[in-house]
Image (cartoon, rainbow, N blue to C red; front, side):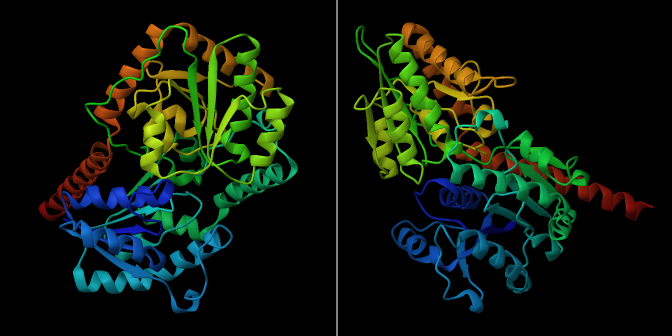
Length: 418
């Protein structure tokens, strides 16, 4: 089978969207011939990697319309640039298809449900997703957001609602064979006619190592807690700081490390001061992924109270290193953690203070029961190895494609017999 993969974000050994695009491309190429169309800004990193480690059946094509050639890709321009890129891609993709004749088209990044992809107009089966972006938390859990963060969150909610009446999005979804969404929340955020054809299927995977050992904690040692993520209000780091502070007030023996950076850092520092734990939290700025993996192995628990993440690759990474996870029952992280691999806090009816208390309770449970903490770590390792590896994620989608192909063949045979 020959696959055209649209991955605007695609970068070897990266986190977030870039890493997702790269891994889907690599895993698909293990079984099929894959041509990836991505933005020109990705070429240097991709070509350097392929020069050192060529991959059979995988080829990259770099696209950027001429009228966007001088626009830099950064955090300010990314969304508008991506939208313009998508609206310009179809003629380019049609020319590729005319030369190479693809069997399937897949769109993988950006993985946001409110941005259309028009590859369904190639006239071949089209898989759109897995997509995210429809996740949200109740307003009562966001009351402590500082003003700028609150405004951005409200604008995001408005844009999500406007997507329901976006004619371009309706056209794009109407031409899909399969729609995949990372969470049930995003499935329900789709325009209503297309929800029935959507399948909830997280787009994230992780590399697991059978030789990974569960981090051990000796009697008298503090339980070392880790948070990793971009410093935005929606990531919930402020709730994590408050929960750790509450645990310390309860005389729980813990140490807390925050890894990340972002515009919300000054607010997080203010929360640290207000909670009386200044100097008791270890702050680490952004670090390369391989160094981060080493940090995981020095910890005992992963705390990630995100308020609306579509996925949460760090949640899988933590479990792959044998760490139980404490998270909220909202969005992507809740789909990646079970009662056997962590503690998920249900939030219906809770306010911010209630959530902080429940998070502190969860910290106490794991800190005071080493047997349970270690067993959760073992089950986390088994969970990611059996169901959440990159290989299993991509093969699952390929099975869906095979099923769709057989169903289509059967329909054609029935028509011909008539």
